Image 1: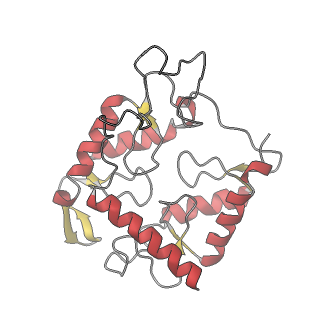
Image 2: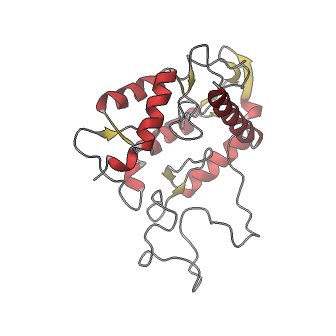
Length: 237
């Protein structure tokens, strides 16, 4: 029980940080030259920037193909999008609280003319309908915009896809369950609860397929998710 509370409090703290920052990470501090740069094309500074020939994935396995950058609609959002889309996501994040009103869906109900972006099931930044459609399209193209294809699963396993870049290999039934849980994400939350707008209703906990995965599931599903994450490297070719 103590471990569960710690995980929930940690998740809540992470949420508060994101919410305070306008639901997304702040821009990198360009004055710190030791900081890892944002993903995307790197200036060809001799002796410092990796090249495609020397390192095709300078930003790790989620490195984007040329012309695309991480969307960064929230922490760890590595869906590859056009640079203009990343800029739009950052701008929408800064407007998040001004586009919320207390309404039918709780304190993060959108004002008229806006809808939840839903870059993930719990992404309730309010945007125009066109921007939400763009987010869904970018999610659908996430895999093909990576510089290196993700590793394939061994026979009998499939990518879980709890979020667009979730390549943990699981049983087909587990992937189907993740999709169902995503579809129920809003219905299982108590937006006025102790941990803010992603508080789960009684009997549910955050799934935590990744640190910012706050889709509400049953405790046994969260345990299975953790076990699948731990076994990820043993289920790929």
